[in-house]
Image (cartoon, rainbow over all chains, first blue to last red; front, side, top):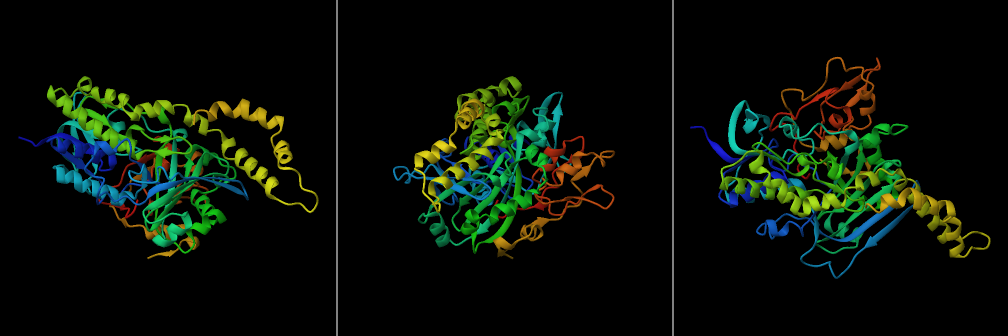
Length: 430
Length: 97
């Protein structure tokens, strides 16, 4: 008799490993098929992971998990053609265990999580690509790997943002360029002492600095620098449709280099050595662009389902991936009670997602993708803020205006009208 | 190999990555789409600058240094290119990610 699994999981990233870990812990047979040399080999994050919603789902992994630094400084830099304003929020009341969020490097984290899943009894095959799905009528019964068929009660699709396999399952259509960004990143090694000094933190603590404005030439997107243990993750997120329409055209790698040359950035990475260059598409469509989550013998998780949220000053994806993998496993476990793996039997997954923070968050931020399409966020406001501050801080040769006069001069009825009429509605969606 | 980060060109950056060679091309411009105007727009969005314009004004694609990021598939759509992941165990292998 041919071997069959409770679940075959396409892709050994965070959602796939979370599903495998949870299934194996419940005594179910789970096979992960990963195309990279190891789990994490094909994954890119900015990146930062928020733990509060997922700590309890995987209680045993965190004490040894390879987390880089706990983020204690939230920084936002509005950047115009020549100026910038840096805002930093920190609060000692929350800058302690249990920390809310950590920077991570996926090749380390995913490899660790894969080992933990294997320790629970999950099987992981690496260097193997799922080429296709096996159908019996419209029921998905397994996958094709290297021309060989492997069967399972349920196939859990966790193959990331492009999700070619979910397309084959008929659960989603190819993505639209308006609903995706590309993240490009350099991993820059910098010794721990320098990271501490440049971000004003101590060992183990870190910072997230996001940039918005001129660095994306006024288009949708932004920059980021995350402090890791002995490195920083530096990069840009660029809306694909906007980037294609940029006039005059600027190549994405050149935008990244220009970002690195900004004095606000160059001072942080000075003396650092780039050790890796990476890129990946990011779902930006929010709730309205989520895929179907379940079908006949099949579930979709994480980026593959479009689960990711850019809320302007926070960007999330990894905890949605891990939690959706967890709930997919729970759905398989529940469906197994009645041996009912059809679309109807697996619909419980949709309900679990609906009741969790995952869909609730996506609903809360349903209007955010549209709000972030407002190009004034990347042009007008950074210019406005830096011009205003320029007026407040600069000393002319002649007499200096009172601060209130500078503000009055900058905040004209036209400005107020623009804010109220054009932007406030959208900004309230953030 | 590592280089002071501030003085690094794209080719040098890609040279830092681990790539494992595969047997077959995984991205192809579909027959009849070579002159599609969208192809010129994809030149600037590829993080590895793998799309270039030749002397005849046609857009060429070279896969060396592909990060499998998917940007060109999203930018061009499946009518213009056939985009598959490379075979298992080939292509970019991130050491940090």
